[in-house]
Length: 200
Image 1 (tube, helix red, strand yellow):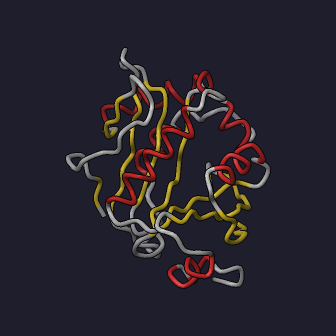
Image 2 (cartoon, one colour):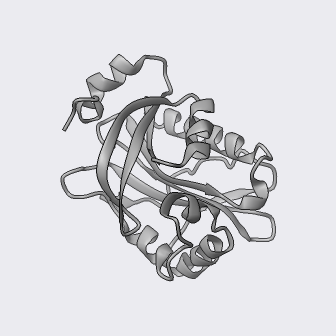
């Protein structure tokens, strides 16, 4: 599928922050952000960002067996042009009307400020306005802080998945989903059978 750079992008949700799509010319900028904010990588992978972490993130797509609609790698930039957050969003994955957030990361200096909640809320509003009924993401086992955050944003645990390759390692993770237009977990499972606890 394709990445869209000209479509209307989400509002940042946070004062003084602009949103744009990252391009291949921004890989060094993204790598610098990853290097300057190691907590995510230490928590999820037990190591700092790899030297080519940004390039991997830029080029990574789901396997061919898991089709999707559109892909956005979004940069959140402060008034000085510094990268203070990044989000990767894919539409219609794993099914129409479900949008998947594969990465949502803010600068450590913003942790506890309320920025993450505000920026996620703006992202959810944008997805909903474009037809998303659910947001979906995966939380790696051991990332208790991340799981607590997503629960507070209204996400529901859907299933456990094991043997997932991420960052050159194999992980177990909790798939979580958030209703954007009402509905319950049964409605989600009706759309995404693969996320049922007994799914493939």
